[in-house]
Image (cartoon, rainbow, N blue to C red; front, top):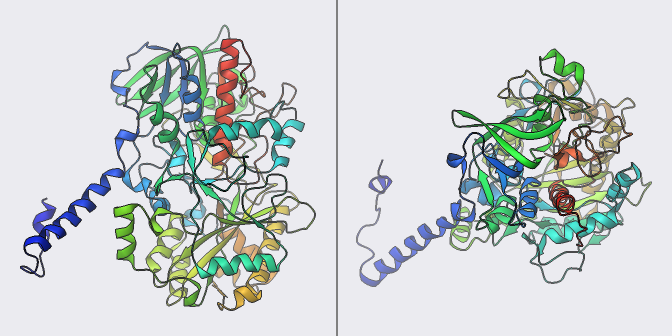
Length: 620
């Protein structure tokens, strides 16, 4: 269809001569500006059509996400090594480049579209009692779908990893790996951030009356304003940094692979679905992969190592399909067992309570013209579309006041006045049932609103990833484990966090905007008095979902740890030349968003692998 033929000039003849020329110049500028979005020039050439059965590489990296891209970057620095990256998805779309449209990627071809298994304890307010767990099936992995938020976590997180026997994973060691990743664009920040790395970091300030009042409200409750992250004493409010470059998402495929795409020893193969890792049964050595590219199934060899960086769902799936995992589970599926390991266990996620939607008086937010915002973005990559709104405005607090470290983090999404469509889209992306969605949309008419989501940082509940069958095309089964901890601590901490938010809304800086908590339609909870403890517990079982941070399913631990899958050098226990490098190796989930820690894991893995094969210590 010729779109131009459908355009109608509603005022013909009013632009002649120079005025017409200027108008056409404006249109041309806008058309040209969209070429910055979704450009394949930012990425490596797709090598998939050139791979042949039996091809050999020194290293094969499975997955191009937050960790995998960094691993491949570090290994390909040695021009004597051939490095192949296998990615199940294709190039990122233009939509993915626009920061404000992050929710619009869920449920698309760039998403694995995972769902949790139904549970009696959680996700009851979502369709089929299943929570959606978006994961990136695209070049750049989940860094193409995420909120672009960059935060490292707490000193205590990494020191605890080391205390569990994971040598050199304490804060003093890992902080140097973070710094090597970073290309800080802001001027007035401390030297804890690097300025020579490949991941560009910036910060967009949300210029809204609500944000300033929210900062004052936290101060009123005794929380300090952090100018930047403080891993040693993180309680307080913080406008975090983002992986955004001049108004465009900066995913890891761009930063760590596209920036070095001229390296002749780096090969990236897209739409390449790994069925399993090939193991030599005599030596228990990983020797290659079986990969489906188009309609062909090929075997590709790795002369040195295979690094599995497919994420906390796909990495355990691939290991189990390869015969590495719980013996009884694999035998039940007729999979030959090479190593009996607790793969898929120890699943942790940051639960997110999306039940606290609050409306405010119109003056809490500046009125915007949508057409102006579109123009600013497509012309200059500025304005609301160039940021994540107030999603990077966090408060870290401790509901028990028993530590200098937080147990809850706030994530905030603002909905402008009279934008019910955005409200409906965001909550439908979580998979909410229709009657709940309708009650939200009805409640926000005529008032701007904010979902003040509490994120549980240190969950006690654990889940598990298992295989549905021995068919690689079958999606694995995700048992989230939400609210299954024996003593009900997760539910109690969430309840305390809701009370914290209620107190926050009662502070003078917030009261002036007339905050009203929306009562969503939860018939199962109507048996309880509204806003009673029992009501909120019921609400949590319905409306707590994911912060998109699954971790721990290929747990790191020393040889004596029977719950571990990989050792502190990320080598799979009992299998030679095979490592896992992504968020699945976390022995305990970090107390912050997981994108930056996953990149750090990738960088540290790359250094350790290089040290092994070069037989020398690398100074950072």
